Image (cartoon, rainbow, N blue to C red; front, side, top):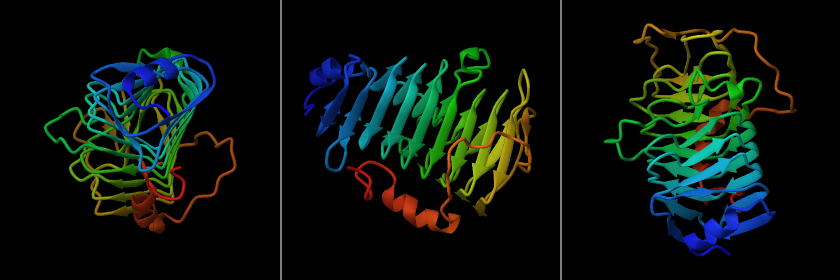
Length: 280
């Protein structure tokens, strides 16, 4: 059982296989905590609270982060930098200074499921949820960033990047979006292919879009989505509003979507730390 920050830093940083059960509230004091390979960080009961710090998975492999509440990080809440084979499940990530969970520098094979993302501090203008590839120059991500987002709750306060994808092959299905006042939800950028399927979009602007900069324009396929009180507008000359008919990758795994009309109830009841039958 991890009960204080020193324990967490000492036990999480090595690459030795460990399951670390975390209880209570830990103030990371602005620190970036390295999470090494072969680790499971599991919050107990209603979820462990990690505040005022970042979990950094730098070139780590085989990592599970589950049932954690991460908030008020000065930078990213979770930073995946060249990480591989990572599962982020049933976490609540809120009010971070940079991204809530960002995937960069050749990160690959990631699933983000049943998480809740949001911002309660609306004075933070950098309310950008999940970025894939740090810039157009992050070419280590070419051929990588195979990522699945499913059954996540993109909640109020999120402005953009739910997610924003460069280079990757990203499957976004069965997510619940309700973030009034946002700029856009899902963005496909250079060299990216994004599948947007069977999601519920409510009171949001631009459920999906393309953003044109350098290199080969991104592609996007959309099907089976539900829109309730959505709006569409291209306020930036680099934005293209598209129907989502591009040919993109086929998911390499078997999957069967839930009916989108069940998502408002299911996702809000079960996404996030300490929620639902899958949290422990």
